[in-house]
Image 1 (tube, rainbow, N blue to C red):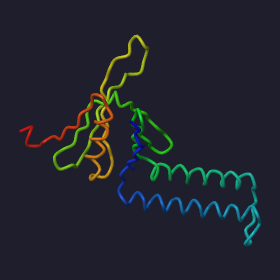
Image 2 (cartoon, rainbow, N blue to C red):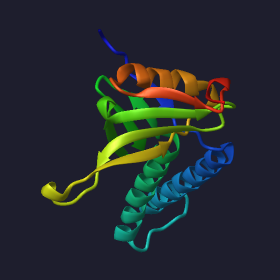
Image 3 (cartoon, helix red, strand yellow):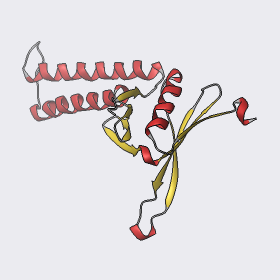
Image 4 (cartoon, rainbow, N blue to C red):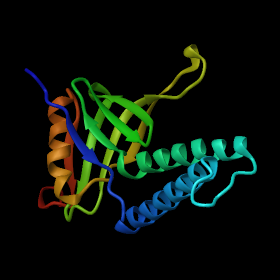
Length: 166
């Protein structure tokens, strides 16, 4: 059975997108000014070339890092694990470790619980359960949770507050 990767993007308020876009535009403008200063174009003169070169590199890297956090974060359903991307950082949660997906009746929140080990010496490592709020569009809660539950051997999808539980 071939599993196609499915990507769910991290849900952020639109204000964060606008704010990040403005910062990236300002950083790119600063980059352009530094390049013009380095090339002595448009009447701009560089008095400290190493500083301007460093500023060019730093502004591009900072803009790329900010962009990856705002527009590159999300959840990817892989063949054997759920990949949680937060900017350039990736955490892998094997499907076999996922215990439960839980949402409320009105779909205002979706939580995932998974098995983890407390870091430490191997002989002293203890089993633990970690929880994480899944931040995706509300319309995708059911599809995401059902996909994870289907891919996992022991995960279940539970809707809290439904008539069955009362």
